[in-house]
Length: 341
Image (cartoon, rainbow, N blue to C red; front, side, top):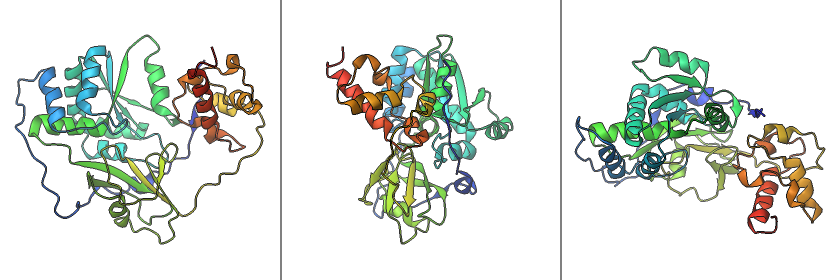
């Protein structure tokens, strides 16, 4: 069965309208410590060592790049992809980084592929328009359109893995940082963050020194006085924060400021099946919800709950606004606890 995914309304044009804006970090921050570039004689160990020295973190999963490349070198993927798109409707930081310097991102992907032994490489872009932009660049790596269905990364991965091919993703920012580390001896001291939401007057992508407080990033975008909610990360799966002195990390891809908190009211399930069609891994969320609500769930009806990726696509399409992902998570915990053999 080919999963349908969810088509989300994209709201990226405002933050992509201008080039990435560089923000200054907190006063007194020490300058990043440079180290010797690697030169021309490169091998896997040297590239991974450069990622370690530069303290590079993959922005999509928060994993240190040296550790990720080491694991990939052991698993030997056939295809390595630079993820240059954001499936969240607000976030556009990956897209902005690709537009800013596609050649550097491609150079970093080549280095990463050499480090882990991947024979094929691919740049995954947000749209056909982005592919047309790449056509004028000096890039020899093939590119593919990720598509507008959410969760796009999962759906693209499933498509590319159909013939048994082993595929792995790297974030575009980590690729660009790897190129800087190897060629210039530059550590990863900055990250690109999208600032969006109806609580800010100027949506933008900012190049922010790592460690900068979230409130400093918000101030640069002319925030509204009536902000009620701030979300760090995806508008779909991000987390709400109250302490705006929290520092930006390499994995902070988006800050969303909202004037109104989303409603938590839900209605009875109508069993429309939209959640089932949206799930990329074969869970039937409405059935899981019914079973969990019964108080005596039948483990045999909790299909694929342990494979849930927490993409929350099911909740996005639910007309009753039920938190179906939470019910699937409860069901997975039940099965993992040994009560559902």
